[in-house]
View (cartoon, rainbow, N blue to C red):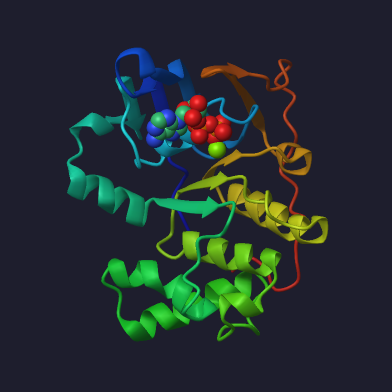
Length: 248
Ligand code: ADP
Ligand code: MG
């Protein structure tokens, strides 16, 4: 279990692509504090800068201007090795199209980040099977991704995101490629991860996802505004619960 979610600060962060007349500023002077344990929705039209912001928070990209703080530490001071370690141990990514390795089983997909972290084969297989059990796939450990539904694939991807105990979960349209009947399981899992104290940031067009979030940011043309309830009356985290997802 994570100690507590990662706390993130953005201080006048901009990200521009290209040069000269082709220069485009995808994120404009963003000031933002994401608290440890926030469940934050990022909404906005296509091309507004949502993925750009998520990639910056996920240490997959670096700002053109401004500072990003991770638990109070300026990430500009991290070398490539430190960034890679942070991504491996602290951050779990979930993508719209799952990004599973199609040639290996669900179990191996979840075990792979643990291999990169130097964990023995026996431990990674037992931990991967526990994680898959937790997301309701304990009976599909040896299934290949092609044998799983979209919702099941996304649950494998969530188990993989948890493989090294991530304290920060970043999800980019995690229900965007799912049928409506598969969405509820993924939404319930995101809420579970939040209720355990992890920081969860989710880019979404899905009102069902945004509705469980405790905060909501909207991006338009690279400008970020908070649209959380101004009263501070936040929705309590309710565990919806899924079979096979009892907390350990
Ligand atoms: P969203 O996720 O909200 O759809 P993005 O963050 O992907 O938006 O993109 C924001 C803007 O930045 C868009 O105009 C997009 O075309 C541009 N953009 C994103 N990534 C790159 C890149 N690597 N190079 C050039 N332009 C990019
Ligand atoms: Mg995007």
